[in-house]
Amino acid sequence: MTPRPPRKIRVDGLEYRWVIQVLDPGHVAVRVWRDRPGRRRQLVVSVEFDDFWLYFREIAAAGERADQLFNLEPVTPGLTAALVRAGIAVGWQPEATGEPAHFTMVGDRTAFALVAEARR
Image 1: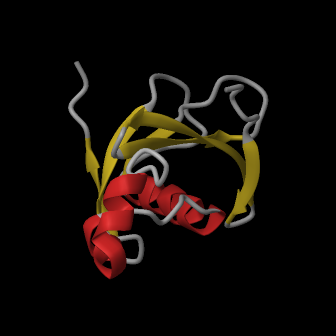
Image 2 (image 1 turned 30 degrees about the vertical axis):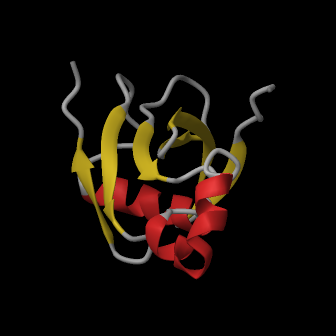
Image 3 (image 1 turned 120 degrees about the horizontal axis):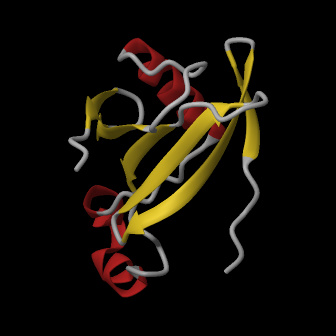
């Protein structure tokens, strides 16, 4: 599968680019950076997401309970904008350079917090 090119998004009047990468069967990483010349510090957020096709049999067997047992809601531009705002609120500086800032999204898609990941 060929990686998709980064998408553009405008958040609070500033241009960003973002991509989604699969981390494991239950998580994706949302990578966001300022759309400006030069290498900018990325925001990387691990988000729970259960791949529908990977868990197809289990989801089908769960029936009406599938929404309770699996995280099937995709990452949308709206969620990405919320992640950018939350990242800035916890100290990510999109104009800075350097290593990516890694966080995990904790909570649901409407009420969440970003928790810094310990990097090795």
